[in-house]
Length: 618
Image (cartoon, rainbow, N blue to C red):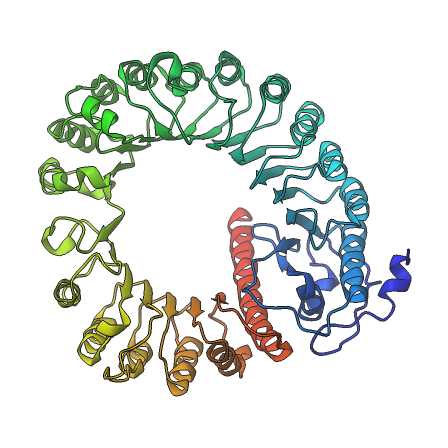
């Protein structure tokens, strides 16, 4: 096997051919960034081969993150070979072993992983020996065991933040390694498990380790529908919540829960929260409403004086809606008596609609409560006029929000001018062309729509509809995100050619859209180039997505966008999702845009860190 030094001796960046100085020493100090920061464009051009990049970390001046990024679906150029693959692996592992400026790893792990197999022992050795790595995010993408990676995780006692995700069955050794780390760590304060699947034996061991841990301040658990065992639905978890001396923030999501009593996974959690004396922020998702859970939440409001922020999203199955439509929840009275909560989120269907008048009145009276949010389910949107009326009468509008989600054109009642909605969605097959025209006409006089998603049948995409969209884009001053899509289907022979010219022209005049997504069919080359110019020259666009089923159109878009893109200091993200042929020039053009977006993002992070440091020095 080649040594890393021999392998890296002739390493060069992918497009420019610049040599990689792999012997650059780490020079990071409390006041100065590492010298490698000046070489990031060249180094990232090399790491790009395996879809990784180095970027400056948020909130930590001078430190870097090594991240696995989701590049568009580009086929690999023919010139790629095993030697380059090996070089990038060696370089990344050498970086981890020698550069204390790297504080965050965000990686994907699979049997065919670009970085971890078959040279994962280099990576694991670097992970064990680099004390500067404070944040580790690991996503296991297959059902292999990855013994070396799991063993390395168990030794990272200096980690401060750990996030473990897995798309399939987690490695057998993952939770034993996590349990070991929880017992021995001196620094771990944040643990996130967003897709938890666990066995009974693993859950028992992990709960024991949690109870023995003395460092965790934030815990996120979202149980997967595939998990046959619940970590949170047991007395041991409630006991942990009651007795922890360090935990401040708790987030729990349960994917599938049914019934009440012993079948309701939330009862143990709610018991533990009610008696906790350290947890100040709680977020619970998919809570089952029943008499037992309602009583326990009321107990939390009445007895827990430590909590400052509570966010509870209730399940909304038909059985839940039948229960809450007639049940006057005791939690309302308990809430009116609570004098410590500062933020509260509740679902709209937890009690009969008239109870909300009492809730809003209580919110208006409370001086300690800074923000209240009512998450309005689709099933309850017919009640919006009443909710808005109650809210207006209470005088609590300044600190109360109705979170309505997205208004779906054609599939919901015609709510007057969509006044409670900031998001409007029009999906193909759900609306008539007349309804879309009316929506666009209304929108020109509204000042609360911030997101607009339009899916249009290509046969309906005529000049009059293009003009209506263009008119709205030109006049709006509040729209922040626009997603515009036409479906890919053959045009009838007698159907006139559809031009995007009118809409693309409107992008040059818009002064509010920050995120633009275009999924285009039958777009002329000239319009593709003008769309690229609109993104590149805009003073407000920060992110853009481009989708076209014709590979040559995507290549044209990025070839035009990449020209002089270095002069743009506003774009932070550009992606496209089009199958392309093996084309190294397409790689080069896309990478030029991506690198500018990375540079701009790093400049923002650097400015934010400077401002934060200046404030703390006052």
